[in-house]
Length: 470
Image: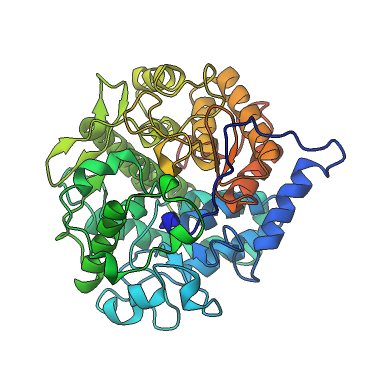
């Protein structure tokens, strides 16, 4: 997501987050109110003032929470996003609201030019979108939304409607984005992976010639200090990659940036398991999808596992090497049910060790290595903790039998969401709110954890366990 463009300034100082007044409404009421405030009638904006359009993986996480408030709205959230799907199968990372002024967000529709530059790839003509993608959480979200009210889902033909679109999305990723030839999906822009300015991208980005500063205006600097944002040099590289991709008609394979990311691929695998469950619900065999998910898990281990780091690393496809940076992305494969037991145990030890500090120096898992040279507790994905990645890790811990640690992480997530005013992200040491408050997926995943209580396996990430069996 290009969240570097629009974010509120972080609060000054390093004070511990406040505790809300005991007279405040219950947490679930306040979380639902955040989602209500962001509802446009067809989808939910991540933040009404700062992110005025629909974002792809945000909507998937938001639907997961909305299902507890209104399964119908959760279905509509995903239907709206999927209606903007391109003919080649890609789900764009932004669907633009035509009522929002062009200068309210950059890159705006006139930068992406989806209906013209994306014509050969089958961009829709009736709605403007970006041309890049985001992590494929959507099939998992659709399955969980169905489980929230199966009767309503069946009556409205929800799974019948979304299944072919989700299958086309996965085909696009598996067939068009295997740029490394090893079976895994590559991202072609840091914004696609969702963790925009992670230090994991620094090395492959260093090869990209930045766009001239005069060729774009950095709207993100209207909302915060430069110290909390990507450098002008890096931002110029982001713009160059996106404009070059656009000028190639959004054709895949020729760009300077191609990275196999552990979280992106793990979420694709989780969604393959979810598609197997959906196929089974629709009366078809899901065994082929389950088998594919298991093959992809093996490829993930083969290509991205680094024993010396005790976790998965990103692979720079153009350079043909692993990137020696520890980001939270490398822990996300813990959510996979067929991950080898020894690797799952190693990931838990790494998560709780000095590099991420869970249960020791930190209450939530930070986005980047606490000991890394590029660590910054307030600089977007270069250190702060995010609720969506911690939600995924809570499910992974629970899935692999780490119930005590999962319960503690769940408690930490709920406390942080409550105390920070549903912040976009927080200082991993103090839980000080950073970025926007009243943030969509923070509120949505808070609702999910409140409704899926920790007694036994909850119905979040663990709902994929077993593929189409059971």
